[in-house]
Length: 175
Image (cartoon, rainbow, N blue to C red; front, side, top):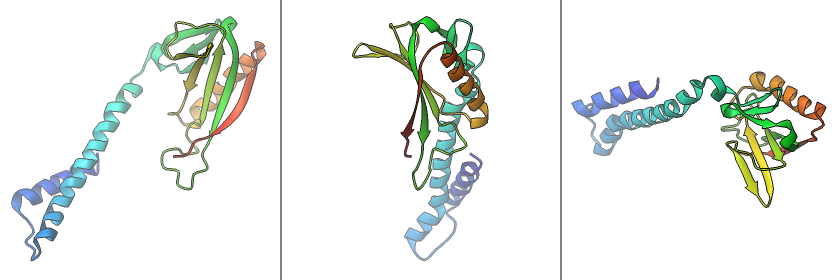
């Protein structure tokens, strides 16, 4: 947004005033219209970022919980509880990025996920039933490692201490 707004204003000014005069018409069009096009693109990306980022930043209460282990079981987004007795097993996934150019996936950001295998289907958002297997996938892909690493390790440790088998796997994620 900080780059898009000035470029848009400059481009609008150049297009509206017909500046600058050049001997080649194509160069004149690109020189005056280029900042306008780049400004519009920058503002479009900024608007998309605001539309998708603000609702996530304003989550409060139960909606702000992505993964927590409570007295009765695992608490997921929305404050929904998955009872310990209904958890058959869990898979802790660590995503690895070996791409030459890491465009969207930085090492300092979250690269973990948790998949809970359930004994029976529950009325919890995110439950997927396929071939008689019921799972809940918990993705924590939008947080820095400092915010998720300790609580994630605590949830995995509490699952293990309650006799729930936790398998740790690694998956490649190329961006």
